Length: 414
Image (cartoon, rainbow, N blue to C red; front, top):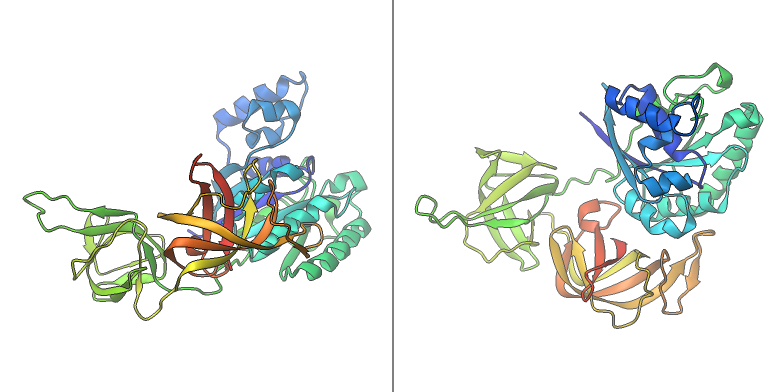
């Protein structure tokens, strides 16, 4: 079944958690025991209180007491037509890093706008991050329509304002849906209160939206997670390379190149599910066997020799600084891309990105928490990659402080 990954973002109190709760509740994607627990928790605020649907995603007690969502909350559900993974990202300005993380693997961005407030700085911030990450499609959900008397005029005004901004930052495909998450208008079912709206309700939209992040990218990419060497009498010469196929497909007999070494060989066998198979495709966990006995280790990339990725010791990237401590030149860093890890250093900060205007700001050499910047990174070992817009797994990475082991930045290769 097809899988859609999407995230929700918006200002604090725009109703993100309530929208997801309504989506799960009205689509009957919540078990009976969870509903019973939800009812009890909601009644703690008053005997006749309605079910607080936001509690489905606000998992931490401290968050509930403040009425906000702080961390990225992931929820999973499915319908007859599609499976879904939802990342509910925080709305506060200081949690930009959380949103960057939640959005990095998404195929669709749902940006909530309070119908009363219209486009705000946070709306622009979230839209710009969506543009930086190259998310294929953005859906602007204009929520709380009940508080503006379900006004078509107000909806059209916000649509016009957002289209103007989207053009400035290069968002190409944007859709709009009016809704009231609290009342359930146009979330799972079409609403008579919004009879002037002729489009699909949110769930139907999610079930049918065509999302293609990779623009047809289908080159074979495999990164070694583990080298299997049983070294037993029964399997004396066994040498297999275990991992997940990131994209494309492999079949027995394919001529492959191992990167970064550049050595070549042929696939002699493919195992999947403890059985030998003739071929394997994207997202399939496999063990590859090669004809030649080569020095291959965790983090090496195996690709078809006919379609090589870029392999270099320098990368140009856009990063989001995620550490409370400011960046200091000379920081000892590690770059990790899936199972590949090497020492790294930020050699140049070309510019910072103004998250309100999407303009490049002159760099002062500093990076503070939640700031976005375009940088050049020097590596101790060559990395093999495809640009992020084409291949997420090989085009994304994190930076780790070598001394503290803290993740200090997340980035995408341009």
